[in-house]
Image (tube, rainbow, N blue to C red; front, side):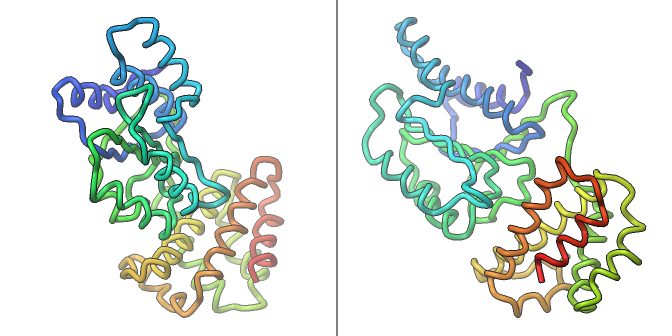
Length: 278
């Protein structure tokens, strides 16, 4: 198991009795981060009974401890209902551990409704509740959550980062602008302008990931009634569309990202996006 400075920082805070109530963990390996975090949670809940400690570790690492709830996205997002269920479970004090603990995997998937719901735990923290938000990019976390968490960078050697190069984000912004303006000729635009820019699966992945991030940003703006980021001013005309439009685009892009695992026909996948999202 790879160790990281990020999880070690959590250990240091615990030993110095400076443990915060909520942490935002940015990592290049979400599952490895969770694995190390679970061992950390086992350690901080230990007692003087070695047999009980071994049992506790097994319960935590197998996600079988009632006072530990790990929440993953349900489809494209983490739903409000998932958060409410977790909060209901934490109405009582923990029985087999010192803390009630929750972990949001891919925390950028919190939608506006679920994010607002979890704010109660963040704004009115209780001593026996610890929260962790794991993401591969802290900038994708809603500001109201990010500002209330202690940020920990938890990176691992030898893990490939899948962050999207800035040039592809710029290409995606321009593509949406052109895609919306050419109307029924979008397929021809794909083949004449966009297709020559994409040479392999990785570049198509970058494009679809960037498109998803853009539509997700607009979805949050519409849901939260917040200000549009300056980098998206060229796409401000999209604000006339409703939240259902952005959710639909995100859904189609999620399907295409899945298809990338077994279909490498770039032109076909680009055409699929145009035809399904119209």
